[in-house]
Image: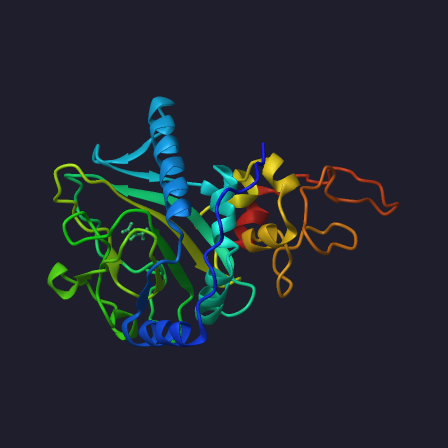
Length: 296
Ligand SMILES: O=C(O)CCC(=O)C(=O)O
């Protein structure tokens, strides 16, 4: 069931605040904006994350690392409040700045760093690209649902690493904790080296929602075409579905439906092999094995 969102969208910042954030992003590869979420929104998101985390463990579907930290994937299916978060003008403005127009949502997840949780390996979110890029191909926005501190596993970041052309490994000593009060959002360049910190507290969980985005020609981390709940696909706003890639961009993402345009839907009867009379037939006679060798 698609329910109405209970949270207020983070407001767009004043011009000078955004300008300062863009400067930090350019220089350091990340920026933290405090009070991006209201206290009510932060509490509602946190409660929903906790409920889902417990539910996934109870259902035997928990994604738990080394028995401690928990990741929740596909939040697009797990509450309208998460879908609204990525539609906010603030996310739109900062992601647009980093990735250009028509960027896509790559994944929408929660990450809970629990006491005793080990640090995540340092990496960049476009680490699968084996060369440095002049501009980021992907970018992330991390909503802090708890105060992020050095002790409780605030994300470790290597300031300026997004500008280092040589792809190399990084050591924890080159990183600093990205701290901020609950309700803050951290935006970061996909080339920035970072990772979840170790949680050294006795009893504090450190929860985050991560809206990871990519340029429209990059493969997404989550496969929304298979993974999105069909009921949500039917009910959601075209703008949201476009963010997931259900629209053609620059000729990419076609389905061969007649007059395809706007939000694309699964086809009941995709156009297949036709005979000369225009009748659909399975014309898939196998090629002889030696023909395959010839192709290879
Ligand atoms: O939760 C965090 O602190 C960061 C997670 C992270 O590094 C990632 O998802 O790539």
